[in-house]
Image (tube, rainbow, N blue to C red; front, side, top):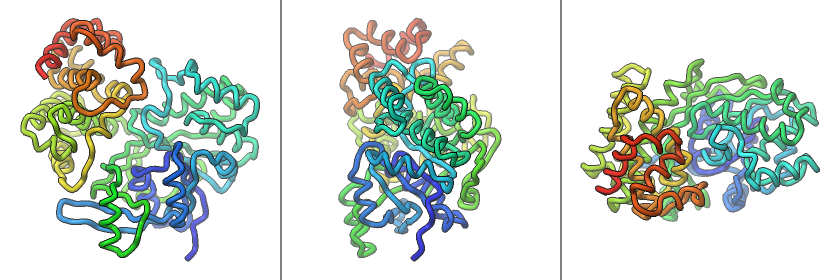
Length: 443
């Protein structure tokens, strides 16, 4: 069986990438021309497991009425993130035309103003390493991107499209900003080359993909007779919206169901404010009520009423037609309620300090500008505060050292401190502080 040539590179090899970008590439009609070389973030285990299977794995599409099993082969090479030589070699190849990313919202290492946090010790260490040797091993995602792009420039390998696929609004511009900020620190000449040779594509991605369990591997073995060390379970629904330029070409992802648009903001807002914010609400409030999964939480009438309240606050600010928004809400309830997708609330609860500013605050600010106190938004912020104080899912946050001390002590002190961390204006808004205090005190 022939293997597709590597023309795409991915950073952040994990379940979501394998259920989403790899799936779209597999189903593009020109898939035989577009193989993917995928690199993990830090772990070596998944890369080793996939390499042992020649990059192939089973995708289990789990509907409420049964499973579908498909073997995907679009990933033709899997590497651990520590393999710097292969990373640089591939990005220096003119055959490679695009680089996709799933490094999580926290992986871009942004400071409050939006650019790269240049004061972080890990960023400073990587910058120093790259100044001394552009091929040196580095550890942060922005530095790995910059090192790869520097190798491409040195090889004169041609233009490249960078396609971030993380849940951030305007994620293309975010990726561009953090890479350029680091380039200015490492090599200002490289920063100029980036402007003319690298395009950044903004995307919206959607496909609920929980962590794989040992039971999932047993299910695959029983159904297919194959012992798969790294299967992926996902839901039937999938969406990929892209906006930007692809100077070196790309697979025909639109024929696999992807949408290309010149105005991505309506799709971003719908996804972030309805699905992702809804997930955050259920993660914090639902886990505090003893639930472990999204399906359990949305089956709780109280959680469901809170979810609908939040959606009713957010929906008027969406620019998509009202009937489309209503249909999306109905579909979300069905997706959340799928009892066979074990999407853990603890997984969703991670990195709230990075997620809530883009999922909740835009609607909150618009409600305040209209003179209203949005109870749904206040409830989510209160649930997160209680999470930081020990309620529900355990805290796993990129900024835990900063936010956990702020959440301690009397609520009247903790609430303005925590809100002020998200946005100084919120901490000074007495009406919002009072609403969050009330919900946090009521549980």
